[in-house]
Amino acid sequence: MEIQLGELTFDVLASGPESAEPVLLLHGFPQTAHSWHRVVALLNAAGLRTYAPNQRGYSPGARPEEVADYAVPNLVRDVVGIADALGLDSFHLVGHDWGAAVAWSTAIAHPERVRTLTAVSVPHPAAFAWARANDPDQVKRSEYINLFRMPGRAEEVLLANDAESLRKVFGTALPVEDTEIHVRAMSEPGALTAALNWYRAAALSEGAAPPARVPTTHIWSTADVALGETGARKCAEFVDAPYELRVLDGVSHWIPDEAPEAVAHAVLSRMAGTSAG
Image: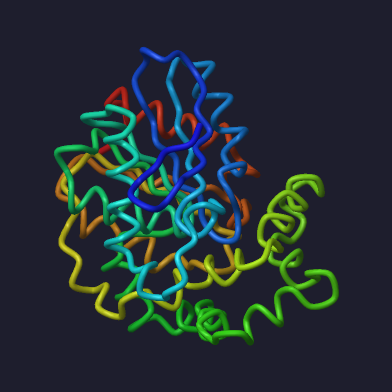
């Protein structure tokens, strides 16, 4: 379906029983809503209604030009606006990578709208900021962000030689056909720049983010090359609600693709109130 928010048009993948409990799923970089298709199938089979939008910059009709347009508050407004357009007073929220960062910020800003939060890979913004400031391991893991913030240069590097470096980002965690879906989307004119603008617009004051006050599960994987253990362990300090950290041994950063059953189980357990915490 398409959802119009002002001048922006968002493509949203909707499936599952229309009258069932709603789950919003937010993808990360450099993926599209397609990244959720395995998780969505499991949630739909469990009787849930799912909505997975191609977020700002990823939907061709929602690709503003200014870097500031991609600041987190705008991304949060998109989530709430999509929920409003769908008639959802409240919803379960799931996010991976950048989608997790937006999901955290949405839950913090609008706890009355978010029934449960499942944040995959990326911890609470304050936990991540603390790790980047205090953990040499996380500092090294985050070095790629410096490249991604370089206008023009990042696009050149990632798209050179038929997007060779962009494909390498995924490693071997995704089937070739799934990698190609994302690479094709990011190769569209303006698409990669819009996606990278999330990094370029990111505030440096993330450590000031208040605690989340909704029931939360954070999923972190030990083979994630971008996100280390420090931020994942620190995350518990920034949730004032039932909370659980789930650690997936040997799984890469691409958790929804590589371990969809673990993600779906975490979402369903959190919804049922059976997670630890």
